[in-house]
Image (tube, rainbow, N blue to C red; front, top):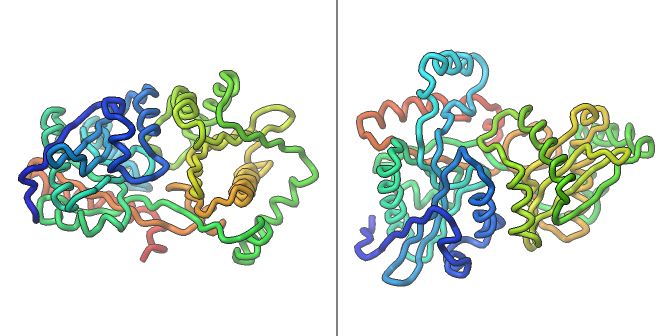
Length: 375
């Protein structure tokens, strides 16, 4: 492994301590950009403490990445009887499954690193910065969260340096290679296609559902959107981040061109929303919310999807990303799974051996049948 003899690191706690021009020299051109991080910094997400690492070769920026510190729920993906066991233990020892962890990546979305020099030397410098910050923050665990297979070659070199690799919940995406929703439907399996047709037949022409698309929201609508988001948050399978209303306000201020709010109303009442980000021909369906007094009866999940897909087709999007969890409906709609991995270690070498066994037991692939489709 190359030793970074002359690489220097700089750690900042807010992205605004770095100029957007400098940051973008190294960080990948993705939807979660400088202004997405600025939104996180400004949105009072008290469960996270964000940080940003920059790597320099003399005065030249050669690496960038983002991360956060939190008390991470290690059993977040655990289900069934084992979840009952971890819940019982947590009542006796409240902090055992919620240790302080320093994580490279995002609470939501995939982890990414900007690399503009020899990759191993940049990663080694970032690891050094994370070790220093973890020591200062008294975080016993370091992790690289939700990195796709393109990073395997870089990170696999660290498997003999204390880190070990576990499966994370996969993301989902779809290539949009059809010219209409009808053409999309024809590419589905017969069971999925029939199911969608039946749902749409029950609502089309029988109830008026109005759609509005906006880059920003008035305060009254913003409050309604956040209320629907909280309804869905309380029902979700698992969730790491709980967003404040400030997040929804700030993202349209910081990313006005990329931000798309889709709002569905019945009789002028907001019953569903989607917060999406679109850059170039890439579309991310990020957050949703429903009024569950009507959501299932009116098949709002599928109405929402149809409208979003039609918008993508009309606006010449080529890739539709829908994130993790809720895999069964996404599978039936034709989304493919994108494997993601976590590289993690305990900073105490003795405890790391025990921690590795524990993580291998509670990793998501042991509890979620979706992983069978990745093999």
